[in-house]
Image 1: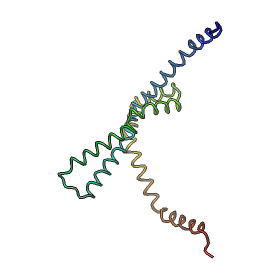
Image 2: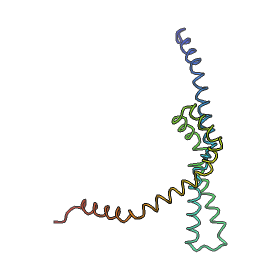
Image 3: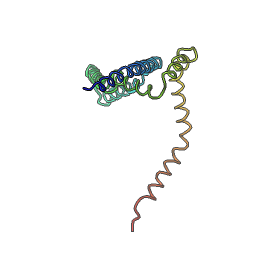
Amino acid sequence: MSRFSVVCSALLLVASTPLLADEASHAAQAKRLLELTHAKNLTVPVYSQVRQAFEQRFVEAKAPESKKALLESYQAKANAALDKAIGWQKLEPQMVSLYSAAFTEAELKELIAFYQSPTGSKVLARMPALMAQSVQISQSQLQPAVPQVNKLLTDMSAELAPKQP
């Protein structure tokens, strides 16, 4: 290896060290924000829906109560499959990368400060219920339009269908 290559390699190593430290610090801030916002709970509804699907199937099969252990066994297997696919250990690195790309380290620090404030804590506590209520409001307002949209879909399908000679 030439002397020039050695010097260039050494300079590159020295120059990249602060970048690696900055990236680690940036990622740590993203991780802290995810902790504050309880991001690992994002998949809880999926687990709940799967559990309910197994319970519904159990009821539909008119299974006797004596088979409840079988239901629980399958629910545990389903949870293990979900953990493998969407468990926090699997998602966290991707979420850290996502948030690190979306926000600068300074912005992450500002967000962390906000969520640690009384107002930010209130937002975190109330947001799930507010979002659920927002969805209910949207769905109830949508109901009157559903028949009209369905008719429009039917009309479009009729116009797109090949004409019979």
